[in-house]
Length: 280
Image 1 (cartoon, helix red, strand yellow):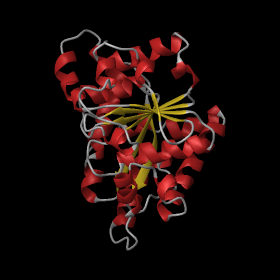
Image 2 (spheres, helix red, strand yellow; image 1 turned 180 degrees about the vertical axis):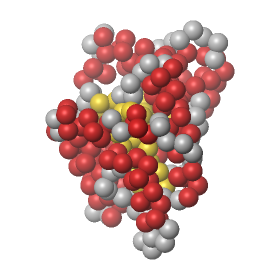
Image 3 (tube, helix red, strand yellow; image 1 turned 90 degrees about the horizontal axis):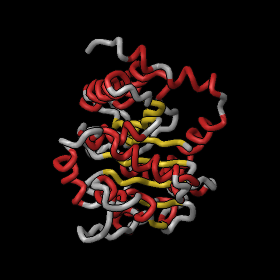
């Protein structure tokens, strides 16, 4: 099982688009995939056609200890793709759990307990956690539950300057909380057809993150807005669009990571320790 947190503290970089469409494409490749919507804005839930009413059970209830994770998992319109939904109640979680012992590992403990019970969660090949656009206790919970981090990053100067904040929180989780999660994928998103400074920023991102940067580039496309309006993935509404092919290519890279031997993956995953030695 691969547990991947999709994270970026900046909004509008394609985080939810990536979590949902990458998850959907993995499902089309016969992987059983669970999307955990860990954002109070509930965009993954909305994109997958879920009712986000405050009266509906959600991941907030899991965090509050009111319900087991497997009890709220829902099927989506894509075979093999499942959702643990969110709603605005999750915004209260940061207040509710701030004084609780072990507040950083609530999500991890809930998922592990569910797996130990032999619930449906034990049968997933991928758990993809769509994080909120902030660096908060919810983000730390997601990172403590994950084994890998994917960062969708728009190729702009300001996005690059914000990368050190992401690196710092990963360092915190690694060193202070002693959880060995690492950045295994950086996804260049919303690339312009007329690249301008995009190419330059992409080269700087590759210098910073090394082999963790995916070769696939996600181009800007109106297909994502059309899919969101229809509450569908791009594979359902525009299966032959350039947008769908971008995520097909990205997914092939993600699957290739499964097939590599542990030693070959070590170089890609092990870049993090040298990353922390950089100064900004």
